[in-house]
Image 1 (spheres, helix red, strand yellow):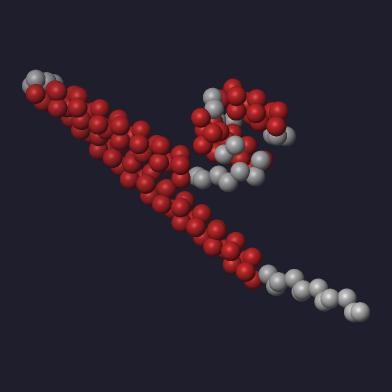
Image 2 (cartoon, one colour):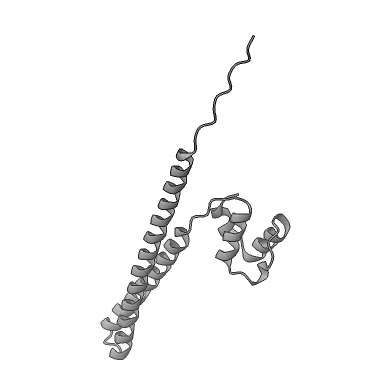
Length: 137
């Protein structure tokens, strides 16, 4: 089982999985992503933190598209200017949110890359085990 499969499961099944197959406590009060992260850590499954942000960006952009369509409909029908102004402001704020999410995702990716590089450097720095000498005959 990997993180993608865990994300597809509904919350009740995730809670049952956490209670039965791991020794986690307090799973009833956790949010879905916290629970997935805890299960992944307990089962030694690699966890990718950037995935959540990419989904959030996609959802926000979808909201922007819907608002822009509504704005165009109001403009075409000479609608309420106050509503149009509110929609423009909302789109502007949502675009700002996407930029922040993208920036956070980029930082998380760099941190993960640095962590992997540090682990590789640590394993390369370990001296190799000395080869056993053949028994004397």
